[in-house]
Amino acid sequence: MKESIPELTLNDGLTLPAIGFGTYKLNGNEGATAINSAIDVGYRLIDTAYNYENEGTVGEAIRRSTVPRNELRITSKLPGRYQEYKKAVTAIQESLYRANLDYYDLYLIHWPNPKQGLYPEAWQALIDAKKWGLIRSIGVCNFLPEHLEQLEKETGVKPSINQIELHPFFNQEDQRRFHQQNNIKTQSWSPLARVTDILENETISHIASQHNKSVSQVILRWHYQLGSIPIPKSSSPERQHENLSIFDFSLNETEMAMMAELTNPNGRLKNQDPATYEEF
Ligand SMILES: NC(=O)c1ccc[n+]([C@@H]2O[C@H](COP(=O)([O-])OP(=O)(O)OC[C@H]3O[C@@H](n4cnc5c(N)ncnc54)[C@H](OP(=O)(O)O)[C@@H]3O)[C@@H](O)[C@H]2O)c1
Image (spheres, protein in one colour):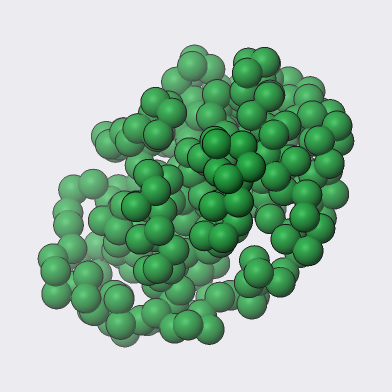
């Protein structure tokens, strides 16, 4: 049975489903089969990136699917090495050619790389690409409040979303509050903390047993109730379906408070603090 997924509206009017599908490590024919299965199961928001080297795989999965293009929301991301304006414009075009798409629904700056000082230039390229019809909505990943403020100061244009590391071990409370105050939607990457240790977590297992749900479902429901869009990756059709089945139960205030206790200021999976971490 297909799950019914709520829709959210971004600050520029684009609608997105409340949960999406991550594709990191899904490449080639196996990847296309997994992504095609995700679309079949009901995902409509698909997250790729230039640096995952699978924009072509996503394009192939879309071609294999019977779902009309305008019902899908496809996201890609600009790598750090192409943040200069002209390089950014070319990279966006290259991203489209790789996927054989006419437009991306969302295009994001992958990392701010603040030491380079080029992200405002990259942002101007995204603004222009949107004007040219290559992208419907523009956003960022891993931007701290100061980076978001800089974009608005230099261009007057706010991102529609900021995709950040967010899971029960790193709940990003302050960053989420900043997004909410500035009408920027939060998306959660590694929403299941890449399942390292988390499936055995006693608190989440206890909550899951109360609802007759799995640990993954409780975590993904928690993201939804925080107001963030999780984009779990799974290569298995069963787990893809499991991860979508989160709209038929809810966590109460006590359970949300128990989940909040699990966070840790050093809870980033790989210590990728955007203030210093750079990715090209
Ligand atoms: N913007 C950024 O900087 C950034 C950084 C990292 C990731 N991302 C995006 O975020 C997406 C998701 O993050 P992620 O892939 O790092 O991690 P994740 O979605 O938290 O976890 C993926 C792992 O969880 C397993 N899994 C999924 N559902 C499961 C379930 N129901 N039960 C048990 N295991 C399950 C998957 O295994 P199976 O495949 O075997 O099911 C996979 O090993 C990525 O794919 C990518 O699109 C963005």
